[in-house]
Length: 162
Image 1: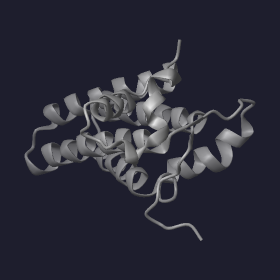
Image 2: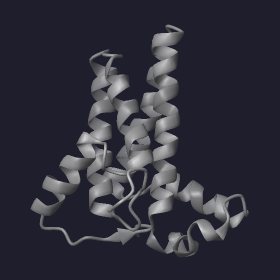
Image 3: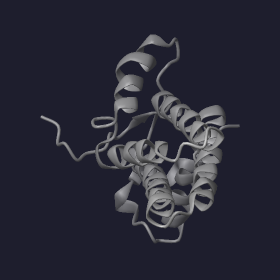
Image 4: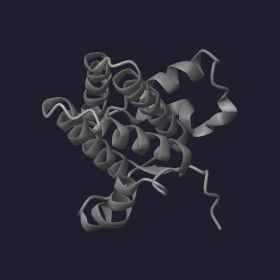
């Protein structure tokens, strides 16, 4: 039986890119339609995914159980720890956006953070470029993140899109 607070390793990059596409849509809808309450959904999704992968994320469940299997793409597996780190960055930015909007009344500042999320998620979804994964790799190179966290991550630059 799988532990509830676990993250998949490896991660199917097809699913990760589809989840990122959903993040892009939700982020853009939040800003364009000026609906700060959507920040709560965005933050919940990131926190759920960083804690449990797709297990407690409704969008993660839809993607991994319905969308990915229905698509004709071959699974491409990548290390899980960098993807979890990237989800952690999204969680930090989105929870901060919720605090800015609802706690401090700084909706514009919250939307700036959501715009940053939208840019990063677009790069992931469209080009397969995971900014959080690149930051993770740099932190590993400088010894901030020990190699034992992700032995397979030592060659993460080789997984970069051409």
